[in-house]
Image (spheres, helix red, strand yellow):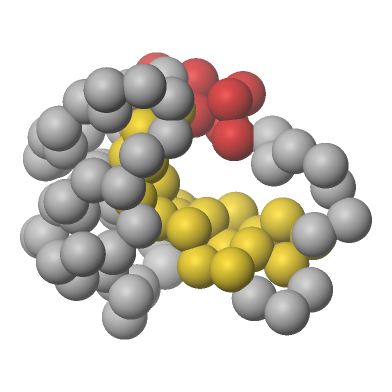
Length: 88
């Protein structure tokens, strides 16, 4: 929690919303780095590729309760879709 602004967070970056929390995904060789991008503080979660599904649902619920959003992203039409990132 409290990590620097991701360098990949710029117009056109792949972002998605889970339970009202906006995430940026940065796939790597052995893991994917997910960053919460719509709160006053950035939060990173690194998930190994060996997991079939990232545990972002429960984490999103906790973030949503503890940290108010500081910017709004367009709600995805269906499931996970690329959205314009919050820039702050």
